[in-house]
Image (cartoon, rainbow, N blue to C red; front, side, top):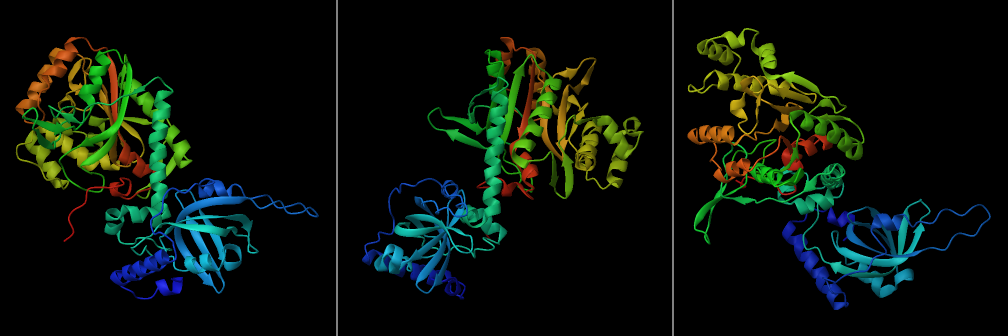
Length: 495
């Protein structure tokens, strides 16, 4: 069909019928609708790179290279006895020049039965048209896969947001900006690996199905393992297993993998998400800060091409060193210098006057953290290490020497969102057992006795961090929502 015909108001059912009719006509002409492997000269980007340089004045033109290429038809323009078409693969696009003189009357007539979205393989000379368009003069072609569903209009791709997530395969081939964002995501993860491996870190794999929902305070997904007749959990974090490897003598380890939390869906949360978690023996909180100040600028340079990125309408500068700010000082600057001297009732009154909804059971620590979480964190746009966080919120970290109420840890906040926590890890089995016991009592996390026993074998001083990959990709690709950077996000049922 021509572009003009494709723009006519035709239902999806009619389009499918037209395409099936075309498929049957092609079959009758000996063109099987679903082909097999097609040997290519290379990707379309590689084919384009073979274009000969223009001949010097007075010199004969260089011989035209013969190439074999394959891809999806995303535009067809019928011009009498010639058809121009755009062929696209995952790397680039190229124009096809098809006429009976080059490929024969039968092949030319059959080509006119193709539809937008069909996959074809072509062979022919590479040349440049009078208008300067690099093209393949098609001598032979094969139908590799018939598309039975009409692709989106070529200039806008999928416009409906829900359709873009539900039909990601269509979104990727019809929206170049979506495809480019996921190419960048792949590059970010690849660069993470290269950077860490160059510094002696080993990539490892730890269990996703775990007997305890450990390593963080979050609601897990639970299931029943029939063979052992027991409940198991999709991991909420790989932390406790990675630390076992530190005990075992793996001094620098990292894992890039999925974690699962049975919690809400919103702009920056998906129940299945990707985290880079790493641990370094003989390190601490400062070691982890150094890693972020090295890794993040590297990713900006390699993928974004700049250390100043714009996300959510704000410019974020990833040029180190990053700011360090104290939790209590940030809270006082926001809610009042006398905050920590107030009685609980006065704290609650002031926080509620600032628009916060408080649980009646919350004590001073929880009320203060609500102030930080709702009023302070969202205003921290530039990369900031927030230190001095109450130890009650980070039981897997050591405390600051001389102050058992404060964790020797940081929350790394960028663009008003926590991107990464980092700890001086707790390696005292007695202190860890007490912290676990307190959490179990609060029904926040089950005690992992095997992990505590591993600590009793002796874990060296260790630094650790967990970097949210999805949120980082959002920032480096200017994505509005986490669903834009996860290929197949969790979605609500259609109404």
